[in-house]
Length: 409
Ligand SMILES: *Cc1c(COP(=O)(O)O)cnc(C)c1O
Image 1: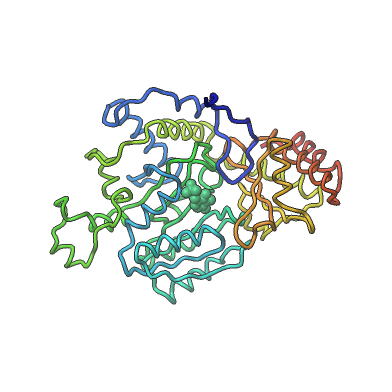
Image 2: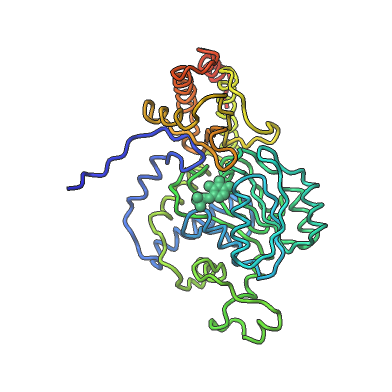
């Protein structure tokens, strides 16, 4: 026989999934209602309203795609890319590569510029590449979780707007933890995540897009739905969107006043997102960003005191992920396993060229709390001492506790 489900209580300090606020877990057991029940469409509308506030946008369209964050990225890209479109993807970590992969699958001609992992682009470098390749779309990651860096967007957005290039942004790892201004930064389409700084389980991908995107996808509605004729499509050389599940024009008709049936809504996940958004707005965006920066600072002070070296260009550090270089001769994964086994604390490794070279500590959403920061500093020190790594003993916690005692958020 199988036992009752029982999972250990963990301290999760990875870049996702992170700990979920108990309030969110509680609403997930709220009874199911039908997706066209007025009680539920009210929930849908409230979620859209709250998402607009989170995204700092006046866009009409702000709703989640059912699926993990990459489902939102795929929905956005497959809906705007016409086969043959030129998409410029500036890559400075692993998630830039994901954008390339998805764009290629939908028939785009992808132009790539690359930056060494640990740094970001100067806006002028991206703008120069735009002038060279004359793209239809620029797709860019805001917060690169794999390297812990954050790319500035505003100047790129303004340049795209001037040149009538669509600007699509992956803000999965920053939304709810660092400032993201969709309208002010001239972002045409933006994708967020739930399991990172929103502290909601994985399974929805909130996104938003403006009129420029809406007009583009309206031209691509499938012929059979009687919205565009075959001739009209041929005349404009447009092709219909190749995915049914990810067709934003259909999702929009489901989320909008027409309420056309599409998929069966992930009811309990939407309850969770609603509560997660309520928590964000109760705290206040500014206060929430401040809280993330406050605990990030305590963590950095502690790691510095311990004598560990941080990875990457500090001037463009992502506040929600802190990367540390693994000291010479240390088995990176062994340390992580011991942290989990002995302390129930999970931190992350990284990908590709950085695997085994850095540890990543995520401080996102509900996980971003004083007791977690102090716990990981103490535990990491203990484990490193156990493995015979030479560090400054006994200083990290003292410094972090002093910081917390003296500094208010
Ligand atoms: C986590 C993450 C994703 C992918 O999210 P999934 O939920 O795993 O699909 C995409 N982009 C960035 C920047 C991320 O941090």
